[in-house]
Image (cartoon, rainbow over all chains, first blue to last red; front, side, top):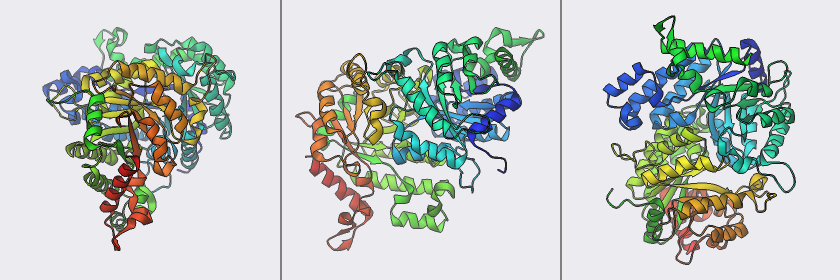
Length: 318
Length: 318
């Protein structure tokens, strides 16, 4: 623990060390698992009926899949982002596996951003923060059972509901990423609304995030409170970069959702810091794409396809 | 499964059968567990250091506590509301216990509203919906590993992100409660903002909720998409009741947070339908209050204090 510093600093150092801001999204949709893993499930009567037949066995396949993805990319990228929903969908077994996947990623030197979009009031928010944010090392004051480095958080309940999270970040050298402008088509419903007092809701949230992040800004220029801004709205991403100079931006929506390299580059500063760009299915399910299915005329191992897709994304963003 | 009907109808029937709209909130804060259960934890080196020392043992105490609370109130009230955060705080063990607590509540005839405030886009939202909403009976098409009757949902990501939840509600005869106006002091930060186009954000969300609920309205007048409106803002609760005539309202904030019976009555229609009023620590930790600590001059069993507090709340709202 001796070199443990604030999340904002740790993320900056990891991005500089790996020379890229790629975040690998771990969204283990059961239907897209590699054939070999699915074959085992079919023989167990699982895959064709989703997770309903045997959640324990499916959870084991998900664990194997996620850990092999981590092994394939851990020397290439700084951070990974498990999507909690795909583990929660598998019930308690899925949550046990989520825990093991986080441990494995950290053991392999990746930062872990838990994408769970939590948000609640007072002591309930504190319980989420204590559950997800911390060192993962039992017996320390910053111990947390899930032990993630950072967590995505929803701001709808108000500025006061972020305080238990930022308090926990300070105690456990962890971070949060607050939803500002999400990548989905309907994100305008609340986020783009113009207020009578001027500006939009997402700008109001962005200003709150920047004020919180500026307070915790480290030597490399960024604090512990990040923002989520989708690659699918490049004009807003550019504005948000300027509006939140101390804030790490998590950019979802690259690749499968339509965001291109030219779009996401607007989130970075001149040193290549300030943003991490997430790709989930574009990397972890690369073997579904014809271009990664074979290599040198032979059928690819799915793990090799994952690695080549991660390398291609790094090159695309360079 | 033969008499299974829509969530809106099932909730109405349960409220009519029990003759009250009380929802017992299961927020098992470890520090407030009854002395007897805590003593076991202290001897195991647990309670004084929170959940850090032995999450498995603490989770077992939480399970025992929640199941005994359920046993104490299940013949009195229609519905209970586990707060997911306090289980998630205990890590994978807590999630196993959450599953068992939901099963126990349903076995005892209570409807279960999972308070997890989930929200995400597209297939991720669908994964949350599939995980939490459903019958809990394996082998059925509406099976879900957690098996709750309803789930609280956050609308910040947009109207499109509610669709996977409402689709699942229709498939599995379950419901959602969308955050409209929350009970915390800072809920004004986004929810009360006046839009340039007129009205507030919470009114905009309320109109969406009502349109979704009206589409699924049952014979007793209420649909499957509910709203969360805090007891701490009675004027808004009254307006929201009128604005959302087809919508079940979950009212948090009664009791410990300051909402009184006169406040929450504004959420009900003339038949005593249309609202459920949540109390968490006021009921489940009633033994911390002097008035429930003894009965007829003798020290109360904590379970008796829980039951008496539930009866008092029912009477207060009558």
